Image (cartoon, rainbow, N blue to C red; front, side, top):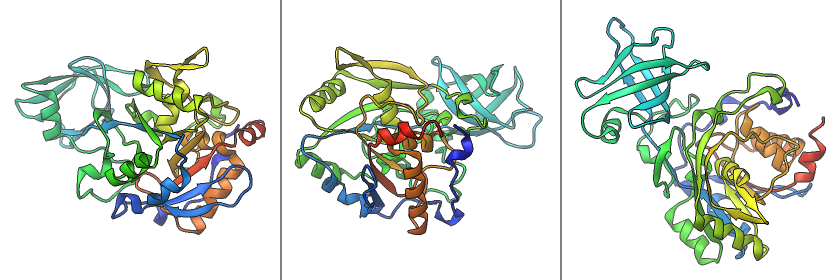
Amino acid sequence: MKKSDFYYDLPEYLIAQHPAAERDAARLMYVPAGNAPTRDMHFRDLPELLNNDDLLVLNDTRVIPARLIGSKEGMQKPVEFLLLRRETLTDWQVIVRPGRKLRQGAKVSFLPGRLSAEVLEVLPDGNRRVRFYFSGSFEALLDEAGQMPLPPYIHEKLEDPEQYQTVYSVHKGSAAAPTAGLHFTPELLEKIKASGTDIAYITLHVGLGTFRPVKTENILDHHMHSEYFILNEEAAEKINACRARGGRVIAVGTTSCRVLESSTIKDGKVLPSSGETDIFIYPSYHFKLTDALITNFHLPESTLLMLVSAFSGRERILSVYNEAVKKEYRFFSFGDAMFLEKDEERGQDESGK
């Protein structure tokens, strides 16, 4: 399939620059399988779409203040680091700007005398492997010096950094938020649990590779960066119990979906697992665990749009996206959400077009 098969026209004014005033006041488009009409709702109405034998799977990662601004001796312009992956206590893979000026051996200061870094290696993809030098707690220094790494299409400053965290975020490590989860409130989660729907938590530390543009026209030539995930024993037990009782496993966000689809299954049972995943889901993919998907509206020609096209069919998704544009839904990280029912046969049928 071609990258251009996943293009749609989006007016810039529909790109949400800030979250809804109340998290669960965001709009929610229900997209049933087949050709049934969509339904316009609000996210707080989500319990109407859930059954008491269903299981919601949420990603409990927490975004770190991964954007660091520093200075290099001899350079007037500031230097920007974007933390991607921690390799050791001191070593990270990072994106740097400006890249040409930061060769092996370059040193950058962020908090004079307390936090600095040296470029150890220029990696094949243009990123850098760097070593940080610091006194005290690296996490505390990062909280002091770092900034929230908002996507480049968001130009407004956040009033509160917690707006870019889910209310259930626990495990620090992401460079971007699992944005479908931003719509939940503690009250909505309690309402869902009280209605009988179970909740399981997995972890995937979101890297910027998930949002890296597809630069090849043939999507099969695109390579995903890997991301670290954990599906623990409790989550595995809940997923197996849900499948045994005939309920739906509902992924909240593409990150949760990618963990589910990266999991290990033996004798029909999901096993606890952890490690790196670089799974790339596009039409023709056969979903093994995910029965429904809650997700935001994604960028044209992105891997995330390819994933939802595999889930509900490319033509159906593009039609629904055009409908959302006409109805002025808000798009991307701080935008509105969709509840997608799986229509895998449609995704399979369209894979050869």
